[in-house]
Image (cartoon, rainbow over all chains, first blue to last red; front, side, top):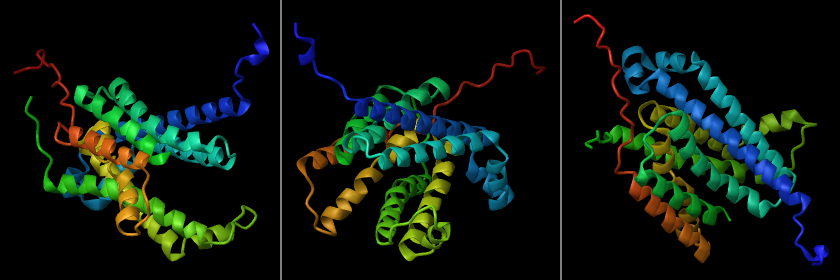
Length: 137
Length: 141
């Protein structure tokens, strides 16, 4: 068997895969932490009705989880900018990060937020995941 | 299992989440591409860019998105908000086709159909997971 005839996966592919993973994981962490923060704060509409807009803003800004979520969202944003700036497999990175994030968010919501991600939501997540990939490609 | 339906106000918040993000990104992209190339060596130029009409409109829309997104997450599941507002992804595509008469490929139409099916499937369902009430049998009656 001639080993030189085997397909070689380029270093660019692995770099792009690593960047996609970084963007998707940091984005998912940001979304889940923000959602956990808002769950712990409670219904913002009720808080606004009792304490006004200022009370609602104070309730959000005094929750440490909220800042952790915003931090990871910022990391995801700059990781995506860096990836796009490096011109790494542009046709792959944009669509892959957009569609994979839909799926990883559903998984993380089930695991960490204990949400009831039933068959209806899984089917919807898969359809939207493929749809976003086609739109972004 | 029966579930509480979203109020008109809550539905409006979800529509804002879906609409503000793609429109904000489009305004930002339009504003930034119309400017001369910016570098970190001139940070004041970057600051001034935020006050050009398209970039300012984009920033305002993204602030609106974040505020409505946080509001939605305070009374609905992340997995519901994310899926029920996914139709915003195809909004720019449809506006480009029907308002600007730009051609849309078969692959993109397929994407629009799949997202529509996905949203139509999840939107009528429950928006929040009901957590079991804490068991406090030891509490005094």
